[in-house]
Length: 258
Image 1 (cartoon, helix red, strand yellow):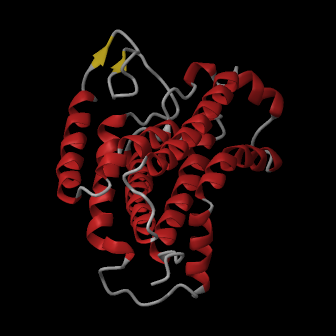
Image 2: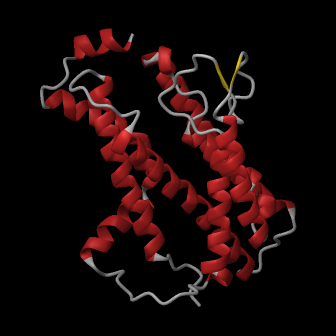
């Protein structure tokens, strides 16, 4: 067994989600910056955003299982502090990147800046899910419970912002990116269940032909392996491309943002 192998189908799915994300954000920016009116709050674009998020966060759960299984097979001390701090360090790193995104959006779009976006969520989720990495059916139950509870909480608003991270939004709360723990932690939990079911012991438990050398597959795998970097860079690049295409005027853009 090669413990350094990557499961190409995971990278491909993540790469597909990257393409979906960039496509949605390109259309979102066209609407947000007034280039062309599009309704991104309902209909097919709304579903595209949710499906993209579901795939990404589901794969976070699957990847956590793969990482845990690989460490176990390599003989690492899974009960010791060292392994927990590995996940803690990874979660804090991603959460701090989320804070950086919050600061940038607060400067440029203070009226809709990101408070608890996808990177904030992933960072916290990695830490919170650590105790459940080996809990197969418990993750299935928790996943369903968290999603249902989150959908219920989304129907209510409150007069304070302190529980934004959980899923309780204050009145008139507006942001361009919002991923509270509920219901999205449920999606990661379902990913943990799927990882335990489909890749237990760092082995693929289902038959899949080896398409890893296919050029099409390699392209999506490359995107999937560099998903975080692409996430951090794609929005500035979209704005630059729109400017070069003549769709945006920088003077009007900065006036619009502020």
